[in-house]
Image (cartoon, rainbow, N blue to C red; front, top):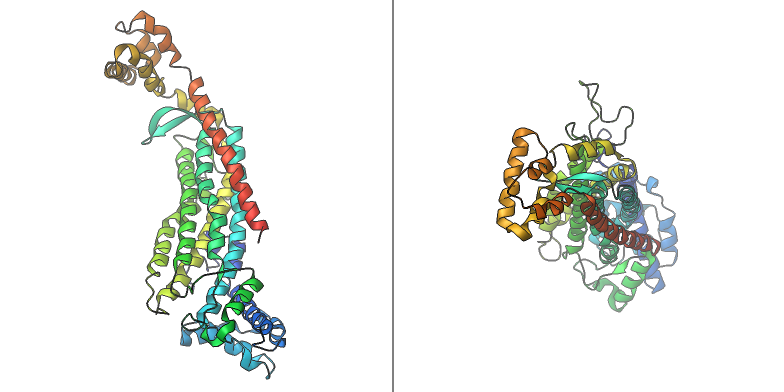
Length: 459
């Protein structure tokens, strides 16, 4: 039995990437805990607290040397995996080293620091897919910088835009989320080594030196205060992941809308058998958008769990810390699946320019009603111009003539306004305005991709 869709062999591959599932596998968690204990031994040996051979002996132990099922049974009895883990590691050490293992540390130090190491690897995966998604969307934006498209508000035709502008909005939203990643990594990727109540009293006057050496061994930062019960960091990480998924959901929502049969302006990349129906052979359902929107549906509740865990009593809460284990890893998993699908869309979305053009013409020029009213307003007044064009729009809907033709036949419009009014039906200003936005977004996205890459290189 599985208790998470991400852990399931059946549904896991749909919702999370294989690489992310591997990062948070039981084997990798045990590997991270071994790495933490080895780093602790290395740091303490450097300051004369344990024998130098302890770290070497711990590093000889492989994750596969430990019985994960047995560790699980021990975790069920202890409420934390560290206690059975330390016993299992100790049993594999030379007898003269066993009493020095885990000196000064507490269970939460090992579990939290191991999780941070897994998060570091997870952020690397996310950064790579983020950069690829942003680059893919940037290419889509550039290719369709001047491709005319209907702009829609409240689901109805509003005014002309370009498909490049639509893609630029997807790009801008995801870039906004990505922009925060380097600073987030620096803040949350910190070690925990503070002992049973956070004072690390067991290491005496060498506590701070050991703490810094320990963090340095692992390539992590050092927090100014114990964070056993200061859980803003996990909550911030979860909130960022939920926000990223939300930005991807904007892309997915638009794709679902634009792939509707009645609109048909885009289609997800076609692969044989992908998006099919068990009953309707003609169907090509939007699988990528579905995965992203499913992640978006689950993410807010998981992030809320992390915020709820901030109400941590005393120096170690009962339950609040353990609740994080369910939420944070699932958010990473969902983000990985959503990003995988967003990258697929960014790099392979199929665009139907002809259908976009046909949809622009669908309403017989009503898209230009706002521009026409604006041309008339300086001479007729804003309200009078609005009423005049509104009446003309009613005639278009009733009789099928184009808005331009109806206005051209309106005797109440002075002759001197005829030429400016005709210019209102030229899409060029709309295209240029949309292109200006896309250019700004593209420039910003380039800087965001560079900052993400720099953050990965600095690790």
